[in-house]
Image (spheres, rainbow, N blue to C red):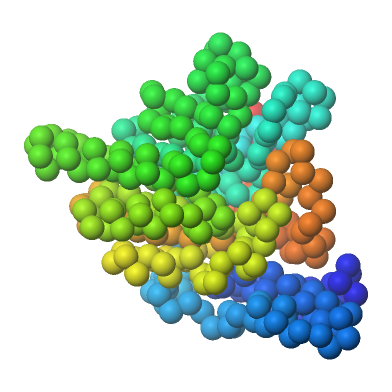
Length: 377
């Protein structure tokens, strides 16, 4: 098999049809690609060590055990997922705004009008929109360096975010943070952090503050929830495990949202961790672990509703793994030549904005004119 042209292999995988967001379906493809690559390497080494091939032989064929036979049956029994036309258009507008903003950032960067490292969110919009649009003003979020779109979803104006990226005093961090340090006290966006894992303790502390105010200071109206967004690479760091333990021990109102885009810069997730199913680490600390198709905003939204509601009711934290994919390189300085073209094409065909648009039209929640009007704003 030619490693640089996995067309036949990809066609075989894609001919299986839409998996309907079955847990493990996205990793299946990457595992298939990696196994094909390792077979090629093994063959080239004339039957040398078999270790490299064995390293990536995971049993992803079966659905994960912890999630969701429940979610799977719910999706089948309630195909419209209970969204109204208004909700659908709001979700679509938020995702389109995020995509357009990031595309504009790319243009300005390549025109040398924007300096420094810029990490774009294209392809992952369903995660931000699915979670953040369910939050209240007082709820807080903490992110990593890929969070322009999270800021927009939380209500920070596009002008304030863009001004920050250009280093202007009118930016949401007064022009002192730039792309990698977005902050807004007004919107309870507690910042983004350039070093992975640093934001998780901040979000955990915010959740502790909420619980302390409600239970110790008797502030009855303090039922605030915190969301911690981070990537798959962060899940091998110590802060992740320490905060899972603390949050479960004290039943803190927090949701840990893993945006697993399968790559930590240039390191494949399957090469970097012994247990690729991150959501399985939740039950080890006594909290639910949930896997969801992060390319489907409606499925993300349903999981987010339950996790956020659970936290707000005082039932403790949830670990949610959203399997998604970024459509650009790690940053705009990354030529993105490490990922296989077949893998990128597979996920590009599952664009979350295109999928939502199709859903809205097929379920008579919107027409082409409605969506074109949003596209032009």
